[in-house]
Length: 492
Image 1: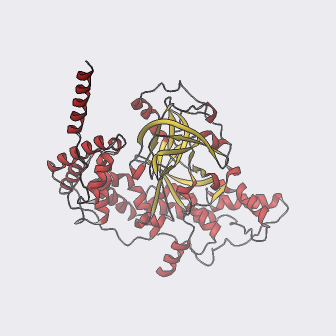
Image 2: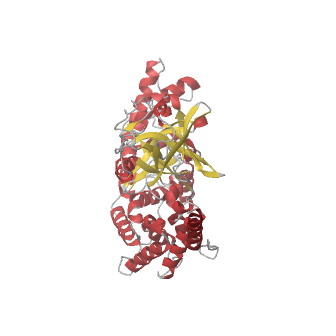
Image 3: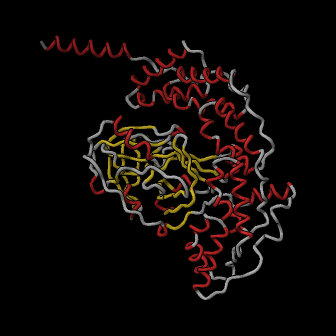
């Protein structure tokens, strides 16, 4: 009996060895093919070399029967990027599926309207055009071309861009803040908004200078008027005047700053206008102190822990997790400059939680979910603990169902991370709570749910869909060690 059992075990081991396939050398593949293959086999890789080798070989076999990756470098940069964005969602299914999607997009181009040549627009108008067509761009170059052409047609009847270089920084920033929403609708609405804000400013008493007010008082006045600042300089100036009068200071009267030196109907030299566009504070980017964050009630936890199936849970939570993109300025978005990408989780219709390291060093930030996009108007944060919250001025986010306190978590319970690694919007990963830690006075949830670059600021959820953490970082030497800042730490 013992001999038969030993022979049976030996046969099983030999059979397992026969099924194992060596991991092929992938260095001869182009970067796009290799990245798609890695994404398709990321789960198998965590199961060991046998499963990983089998997955890689299956993907390579499927690739041999596919048309292969098309050469996209014969297209201009905008068209090429639009083709890749349209197929981003299938990239993680493997290079064969990805290649077929790319070929479909290239074939569709033959019957599509020609990509319009963009006229020499100023940086702000060019950025507004990109914002208005950002969703169309992700649907492929045919849809993108139609959107661009529609925006250019609307621009023909719009007023010229009024130069803002003659206004002081506070006035110019307030004008731009008031028109953030209009800018995301396209250059024509943005230009009309700028003109309307300047007309309202000229009918007001202007924005008084706070230069002669001592620093602490000036900061308090500016904080008290920050919401008015986002409604335009006429509203902002009225608030500043009221605050100055409340402390017995008579605000300045007379000319509107910049009114005489640069009237919107006057034309600045192209060089001066370009310089002003580069130097202007293009979007709010300073991180306000954590204590100034508006007090929001923490959503109560819901449901029974561990009750949901992964597919049902994903349907509940994915609508509350947003892609967060960040750049030095709006111009960098327009010209395709360096853009940081992370994630954020909505906890109210106007507020989302994220990590400060996604935002730091930049001044222009957007939350995106499918076709919806929201421009960030204010940031609050504690840099040392990497906790940041962002608010939007217009539109409405979809908040999470509930937030579960750190004190109720247990090692071993199943959890799910949702974020956007490498721009792959709302990717789901599953794991266990593997530790409850504390670092620099902040509670951390250690889990085996995978996170990677682009996931920072995403959500870690329990089985009922409660937010339990904001994914923050992983150990580079061991990608199974992933950490999230406890969700309730954002309310402390």
